Amino acid sequence: MKHWMTMVLAVAGLAFLSGCASSLSSEAYSRDSARQMQTVYYGTVQSIRTVQIEGTKTPIGTGAGAITGGILGNQVGGGTGRALATVGGALLGGVAGSAAEEGITRQAGYEISVRLDNGRTVSIVQAADVSFQPGERVRVIEARDGTTRVTR
Picture 1 (tube, rainbow, N blue to C red):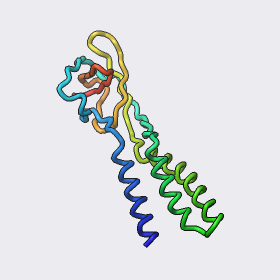
Picture 2 (picture 1 turned 90 degrees about the horizontal axis):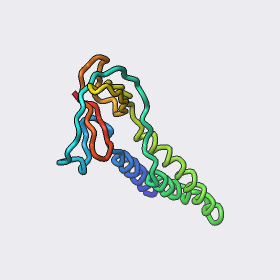
Picture 3 (picture 1 turned 60 degrees about the vertical axis):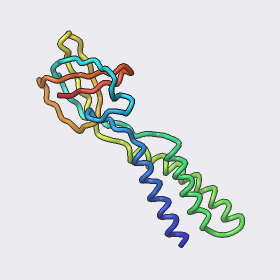
Picture 4 (picture 1 turned 45 degrees about the vertical axis):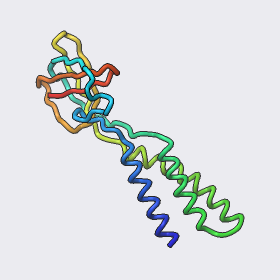
């Protein structure tokens, strides 16, 4: 029964972590961006480079890992050994949880260089969900908070 409960907690923790990642897609808008005026620039794609967008690093991954590690460690031995295993499990679980969160939320992206019609060249990094080709005409949309995306 203890092992079953531990597995349920671990799976729930990983599911929770995967839900924490915000989308970096050109097609996803945050709730705060809805109904906000944005500036649109037109331009031509100059180059595209594949990049890795690092994952999130929040206390949630560390905390979930520490709790899971502590629960697993608490099932080992007895007395002082159990206390040490609980602390060690929590420490190792925290490190593992942090690494897991970063790995789960890491994603492929594109660095897109666009020569705007006003002569300025800009580079935007976004999720690799929509591909572009050099020479393609695009829109660069900039929100008041500086969030920028490339769209067709």
